[in-house]
Image 1: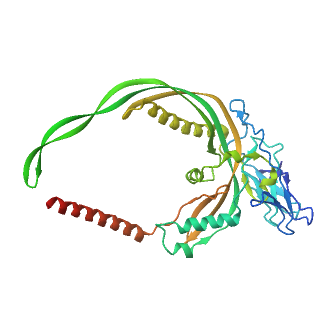
Image 2: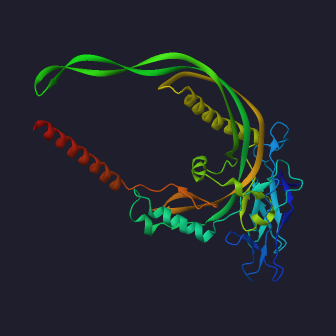
Length: 372
């Protein structure tokens, strides 16, 4: 460590993969799942290891790193051109700002929980752009000009940190279960200008107290551990096929960016627990098997909580339309695209008018039929 204008500066030890033929920096190629030299087109296979990926006990984990991974400056020194580049505090793979060489920060000596496994990129940058073009052309409510006049900004492949959690749950519950029943009532109505008495069925509900137990097992509940990625868009990118997880190797990160987690293990568990509790609530309601349920109270014990720290592949970019920027994400494993797009008020108005016209036609048609 050294002082620089009153701030702490740390020189990071990084790893690169020079080509054995020409010395250029090799990068991971999703299409071939190998290291590729963009200059002489040499390739080196990467041995994938997916056996023995471990899950760790939640309570014995030593998550000593603060939530923001520290505030000190971090520097990578590029052996290719000699330049020093300031590294973002949450980066674990970065590019030299001067020559573009890929650098992967070594795990040794890092504080916090290192990733043990990852899902490699399967979708290349070219394929990701094709997926985006298909997606944007299907935006029904988007302005017609969007498909030809948008400008796509730089596309970046990023490994997003995530936690997965396993847990066994044991719940006790109490509630009121409601069962529908119907009573026949008579009432006066006006039909064709005449009063008449009619009978109809009125739905009522009969409540009863119920209680019981509910047990369940949860496997690989996925939680985004990045505070930089929109939680809603990231959730919509799912599912990721976690059966494709392989042991972490820095070769997979070469040519890509990668984040360290900024949402810690304990905070991640609280997010996972919210998802688990929602699942338990739905399961209990299904078990009660009533027409309605009210005053539901559930108490849950969590046991055998395990976790994994993994990295998931996501292409991140944005596009500009009429001087406004819209962000989008592409699942680097499946090609699923999620993002926001502008909405044409004219198309929305046209759909509303169409719905109103159809509704009016149905109404007048029904009125005419009843009047015959």
